[in-house]
Image (cartoon, rainbow, N blue to C red; front, top):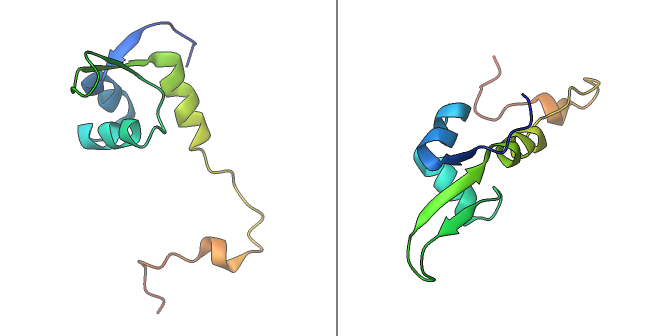
Length: 82
């Protein structure tokens, strides 16, 4: 993705990533996703996310491929072994 100075609202950011609005709000609340909150202190206001910051955040979530030598890294607890 090319770097851009376009501002996205929560709905647009969620749409770009294919995630729910509540997940975007959660990331903002946890201060994991850089954003601007417009409005008075203590009020909800409007959240804006810079497109380039969203891309950088997404890059930070990337999981690199491993060597496959660590069985704990490949074991998924929600999948039962048969």
